[in-house]
Length: 266
Image 1 (cartoon, one colour):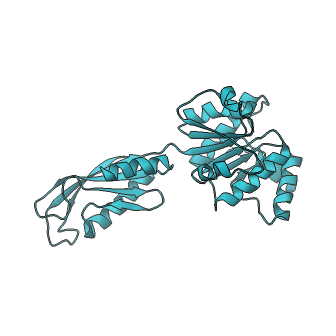
Image 2 (cartoon, helix red, strand yellow):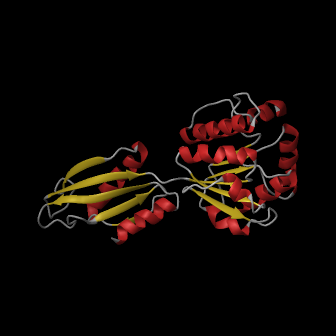
Image 3 (spheres, helix red, strand yellow):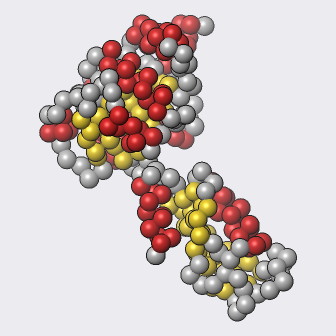
């Protein structure tokens, strides 16, 4: 049961995993029926399917399952793997995708439009805002967490931020946006995506302010945020941002708003 609890913990942390289970084993093999091993998308291992050559092979096959995201059943001849015990072991590989964490700073019109779209895409959404009433404005959702705090000190959200690969920043002021961005960049080494709302002028100023404080704007900063799909209502901007996130997840080449800034600078 402990290995299954570990599965649950890892998925809650936002980690994709593969669970390998010994479903059949010949007498005398080191791995017994029911033995389980977890491989995470960070390469961490928990549990065992018997050790030795069979475990080495199982890790390699689990990596492939992480890549393809397709479950599989494999039968191994241990003698062919160089194990003196011989016999056969059958392993079931199950791919388990986490609900990725997404941190929204600002529960304004765009944040309120964006949160349910992200949840429908499988994200676990956390919303940070300085206004206590924002929870009522956002409404309830089993996949959403509301954190209330000041923007100049997001300590209450730091652990949540560290568990997220995706962030979007749209507070109710440019000064607050910069304060949050700076703290988010300092919270951990890297992210998959940080989106920042703002005009080209605001973004240039923000990048310059980061440099003045010894911080470089990373490649995963999408600012101005969103894809170039047209439209400027909160709902349309939210769709643009969600589409950009999907494009980043799948490595799709799309026309990003931040390219406008890059074109102007070239």
